[in-house]
Length: 210
Length: 91
Image (cartoon, rainbow over all chains, first blue to last red; front, side, top):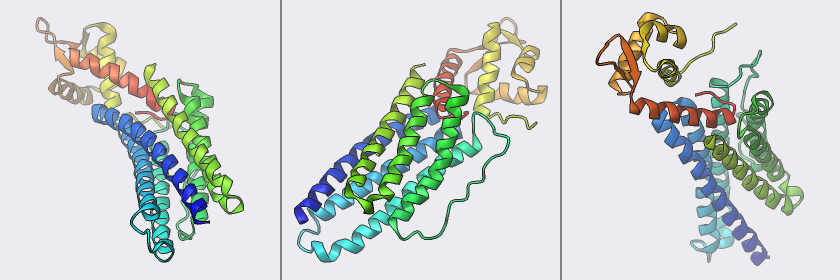
């Protein structure tokens, strides 16, 4: 049983580290653009992807350390509260990163809609991880709607990849939320997350190539 | 109908673009093309000159031209504006 768990965690940590690397690349691209131009839009996107990447790195390192090193002998006793805290921190930072994206779309949309939808992130029930996933879905829904609207309205270079990327990110959170039904959904969620970051990266590179 | 907000960096770009489209431009042309009133434009022209993005013509100080650094700024702005537009955002 423990060996199965360790294998799952191993794959989890590797996928999280790959996603972290992609997030860092996207964040640094926006940071470089921000440092050149000083635009707050670029700063918000850089901060959003940076927070996402940071959360992924912290989670991968702490979960990896917990399972494979530091807590080797007292695995059973010490793991549960420790992992709970890491997951809680991870989820809070991820939702915060999505709020940065929402802020960018609220403050600097390419197209202003007739009526802006109000964004009221739920501030309660922050103690159970599936709820965090569902909260991410709620917050991310605004980002998905805005990026899809942009693709339909402007069709600018890279916009289709970016919109598809945010849809895949939304899907990944839905899959994570449904993990209690089947552990395979957890890996499907990771695959969707990885795909989402690759799509966003592709969109960004395509747009900058002109 | 609410007027679209223009960031400072966007106004810089509009001014430089207005000058670039003419090669050299007088302040009245920049006012018209960048859609700025005289007093605000004066402030931005000073800022652009301090940053080395724009300069007065040595033979005719009423004419402005875009410097090499200004050209690079315009190119980078266009590149990063495309990036932001892919996300449905303005810079």
